[in-house]
Amino acid sequence: MPKTKEELLSEIQRFLDEFQERFKDKSTDPDNFLTIFDIESMWAELVDKTNVLYSDYLNKMVADIDQKALVAKKKESMQKKE
Image (cartoon, rainbow, N blue to C red; front, top):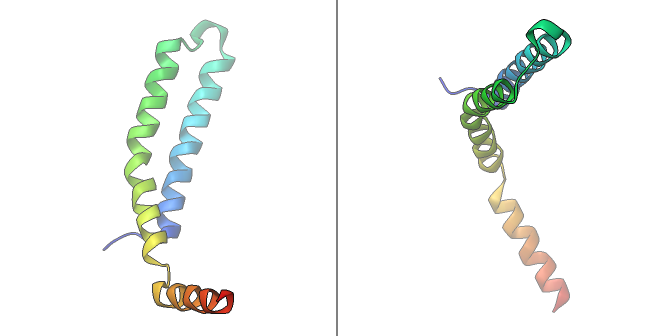
């Protein structure tokens, strides 16, 4: 079953929280500090995990647009201008 927008946002938030926690852990320990490679790898992993989720979320947002009502409002506003 497809995920709801709320489920997608929750999953995105979970990945962001995990990223922030890993970043915090590795940026406070002087003996195990992040390298540029580490940061780039973590960032790439976050992007890989969230790209599809963001795409799915955006598709759901667009699908939720009431096109008939929007077109009707546009026609009404155009007629008022004429």
